[in-house]
Length: 355
Image (cartoon, helix red, strand yellow):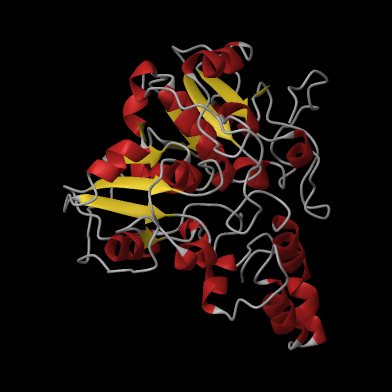
């Protein structure tokens, strides 16, 4: 039986996307729900409410960022800048047969126009729908399908992008890192930066030749709940809670506690990307200040968690940009820890950074 915290949005791209503006699958999922028995409707109510709630937060169908455009920093200015790339680099490598572009935005946006040569990966497809915890990394068979359909091989150079400030592109980048593949970069500024650079989109799609990778879980990029708990008090870990104030207040209809993992410091994911119409990653100095204020020890392994595992990846990228050598995503995140009273939790900090 699937968990009440599992949201099967990965199948929604196969439905008729004819719902209300801002949440194109709203009517389809509600119609599907109302067609079922009363008992089934009650069981499915929570994931559906979570899905509808998701329409109001950044994601594939959210409104585009607005305000003055940000200013990109030279990727060479970041200690770990090799994880980032620019629209100019992509534009000059479009004809490179080893390049694999992955659009992690909504399917509607992809169909309306994407960077030439890109394929679509819906970020929800990186989630294991049969796990009791929402947001956990999909199993090897699902990952293999993503890799095959994206045409990724051991010699590919992969660039991921979205229209959400890198929040979901970071998840795909982290997924590839977590299975031992590191020839992957995030397009700084995403779709918005591509358009601002005067580059065109296309509706034409040519599937790449099937890809394939040998998958080996890389535990330098992820950490389990049991390992995290084991090292809570031995001084070997720094822990970052990247939830916003609004996310820290979420209980998922009483399923999650209010609190945080003991010893965690607060650096919301919104603090690593510039606000405005082109959401570039913040400059190295601003990023360094954000994490210095949290008093992280660069010599420690840093474990990052969010409201769920998907949300943790953007901070993973930010710390990698700063050159932190050991950054590991707690895949279960608060969706797992906060739902189980057997795991210790402490009150939220009274001096949390702004969301």
